[in-house]
Length: 430
Image (spheres, rainbow, N blue to C red):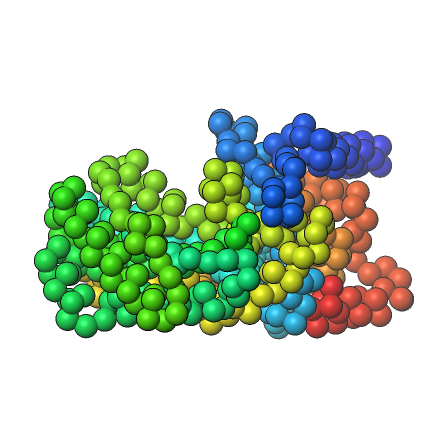
């Protein structure tokens, strides 16, 4: 390629990058797909929102924006939790190697050979990846239930809370109340009476005007669909028992709102709606769920967005991270996966580390030195967005150069700076 042609391409890439930065500036004025809305009565400002795509072009832009948002949130989480493993997530190659792949699956780009934390609670990147697989598994489970003529019903449980309640205390009551609800002969008799063959429970947390709001979802699978009268009777029993167990633990669950059971037809639309609702955490659907946000408050990842407006959310996210540590997000009852013909369950860390989540090809490879610069300049999300729309290695190199990313150490001092940068990354200092 001639010098003139290369300069022209570099100018084109720079202009494209300028347009992207301009779009982000316009976002603050509400002129693009990313908007900022006024603060609610809780005193916390609203996080960035992504609007649902309507066509192929919108979908591509939507995915690009979601990647930028996840990595921006990951950078914030790393600063807030500097001693946690999330501070090192997606920042350097797998130990023992010195390269990072950029892969493309035909529609979007992703990284390969990166260290990951696998945390579904505090890492926006790993959470999205893990929960995408969980969603597919739940879709398969409900489809399998439909194939043998069974039913699936969504139970939601919550306890009363105020702004003075700690998240850890609320979680202890909620989780233990549900555990006791399932204990003993009364539970066994109810399972037999209504033909419940198993359940999947999901833990979710939001924050709003009344403080922390933890709640549990339980997807109940039955041998045959239940009548409306049976659903009502089962809900009444579950509500009474759950409220009683919460009371014994010093908490309070409303007889009317403490436990809610609902179900619908297991057609394709019904399956999709249930699985999206149960596994919305960490996925793009949660980022766009403005109705849910207004009703239930901020998701923990949305708290990271508002850090630029209110430092209070840093302390809230630290409290959240401490309270969720060691807890499981999604749990299958014993024997249910085998009954529904599902494969062995994989752990969160295993899913997050798996480079083969979806078929893709390597379009280019960065050295550890090059990727360290991408990380330090806050370009991980931007790079994936650009590579998704332009899977051309030569143009990606030019894009990197336009963002002052050096392709190789070319001075004596660079070797020292490279070692210093990688050392800071490994210690989670940047």
